Length: 505
Image (cartoon, rainbow, N blue to C red):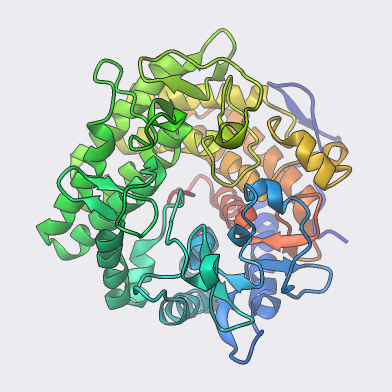
């Protein structure tokens, strides 16, 4: 039986109306959804597996049994994880994937006296830094490796010794640093040692093998931010120099006529070496803006704005009311194509797919929307606000919420009935709600707040079940990698509105 049921009808791309008996979710009801889920995690979602019990949070919980299975049922995992099952952290825990959840817990501790939430988050962080460590000293976390609670040791690729690759998320370095400063400093220093290939040009590899590999923008942004953060903490200029060195990798690779950078300059003839995507305006811009805020150096902000303005100029199709998903560096959009073979299957041609399915790849529409409004909040730049307004228009045009078109058929095959059920991943709901809450603060347009409320009501209706929040409407699992933490934080943002909270990135 669901805790709260707010049923909404999505009437068109620009109009949402609730049923006569329904009303926008009240702040106390939104907070109840959030705290109920966190309470369930603290009671049933900790590591009670293997010989050693720890305060780590399990990444997958079957809400029917309130246990974390050693081998979860597959459902959509092969699609969402791009065929890499370790990304799901089966039978284990991944602090990287729980950053949004921990942000929610700390915020509730600060604003509503839930001190045991902060204590639980700190205990998780300390235990992870102590226990989930590779042989080279880096943490076993990210998109390849994690902590296996059943074996009490790192798990995933190569039994936990596989690639250290941290992507997309804006981690709460300040909180982790407060919990365990020396270990955080060690992690950042070792990341520089193992991910950098050429410290003169800023060439890095997304994997920690000191060799030339994919220099994805969203991995470069992580290296920029962690060094900018440590500069802000220590004022040691070496960290600011490191941050700028990595950021210059993409800045120097941009087309100087358009300011569009390639996503991965080092991949040779592959399409990501010669095209720009919302990997740039989404996670990369967000990480640059965060780097500006933690370091105080405006250069990061200026780069972020240059990328946003370039994509606004070349990537927005005003007649269609949609963003282009892929641009040649001269600004030419890549028209829609059928899925290719091999790596080309991930090529995001044509218009953006708002309700994206896969965890990574090259499409980050809702994060790009968040980055646009974030840029406006930080700089007051008119083009940033225009980008945000355009994203609002594009998202409205993609209603009703549903599985993203690029992988909808594959998801239906994996989870029969998912298309009829409707809805999307918790992360998509969360990012969209956060975006419209913040857009309302900028525009004071009641339609923006109404849409955030309607999305929250639908997310609760489709995902809340006996106190848990599921990762997707069509499966009975709480999954951290489905972005439940982002949804919980967004519901808290909506409950606290108009008081602003830190970014949900």
